[in-house]
Amino acid sequence: MKALPDFATIEMRELAESITRDIVRGNLDVQWSSIKGLENAKRLLKEAVVMPIKYPQYFTGLLTPWKGILLFGPPGTGKTMLAKAVATECKTTFFNISASSIVSKWRGDSEKLVKVLFEVARHLAPSTIFLDEIDALISQRGEGSSEHEASRRLKTELLVQMDGLTKSNELVFVLAATNLPWQLDSAMLRRLEKRILVPLPEAEARRGIFEELLLPQSNGVELPFNAMVEGTEGYSGSDIRIVCKEAAMRPLRRVMAILEKREENSREVELPQIGPITSDDVMFALKTTRPSAHLQAIRYTQFDNDYGSQAL
Image 1: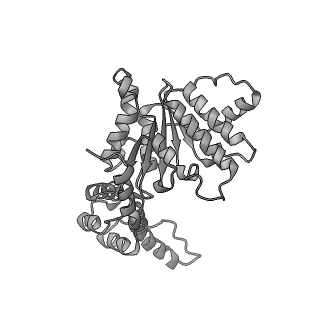
Image 2: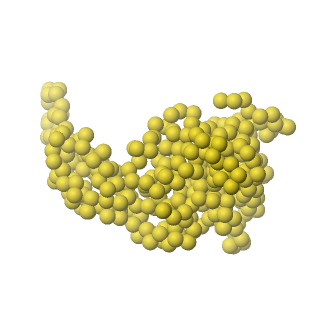
Image 3: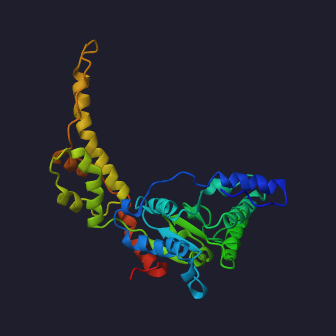
């Protein structure tokens, strides 16, 4: 990694050093192919982030790359996974920023941290600044008297720095994710030019997730994938993973029942093998697991119709 830029004061350099701790240095090893479904979201991210880096000669003038991208949708649908894929595939300097990274208890430091973040990102360009749960940082302003002055200053500095990106030639992308897009300030929505819905997985994607997670555990036992796909309508990818984990726990529980029957002083050393997952295990897991975000799906669709970047 390049050396940090020269700052006027020691204080600003110390803030810059704290920001560099949030740079992802290891390979996250998340490929586009490892994310099931979400073809529209992947296409738009490639168009906005990957292609300008690989073929910068095409993205000039009116085709200047997008500077801000928002991923929104129900919890557990793969927004953070998409961000990891961007970090893996793009080979940019990837800043993984949360509220704790740029919020300080010292007066004025939060705004300075935001300014330093963008200065370092421009210096280390091409860069991607990932703001997870951005609604915690920049919810709507002026809605009530409870908003603290420090919070308002932080929001203003973030908006100013993002607006400055449009006047810069460095490739710096702001990639934001949220489960509550309707709580974002309208000025931030304007700066996040591409707003991409990450929806609940469709039938084909759900089947792909089930096959990837359960086939290695089935040892060739045929599983009712069609019933599993039909029974998980409205489930997020995270919910489906919980279903698979519950199904995988059933063979382990059978082994644990055998172990508990053994006497404490038993000299048996060999442990029983965990059997494969069966159809009964999967159907039991479906009956005992409920989706977590399906009730808000209509609201996300409405927001997508009002503000989102629609699929072609």
